[in-house]
Image (cartoon, one colour):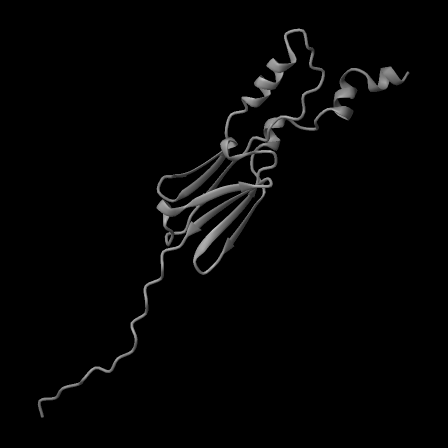
Length: 144
């Protein structure tokens, strides 16, 4: 009786993913902090290293952060050998893409990025604000 109810299509609903994997891979959680000298973006990238993440500036001011294609899973499957049978493969690398429109007052050529403990930190330095001219007296002349 249990096989009748929990077998077939119901088993997939109860034990499988509730939605397609591509829906879960849309974005990564991000914090954006603005300091007086820079913008700091921290993005969760669990299990990824520096070679697994691609950071670039597109269209002049759009910061694009993406995971690289998952070749790791293919290498792992090759290590198991030709006779191995995979029953469940849910531990794949997370795939994501995130785009952020940067403000106009940033130095795009000086952006730095690093990965540490599953967090990608991108530092975008700001242009120094122009110094305000100090007030100075202006002499007023008269023809009288």
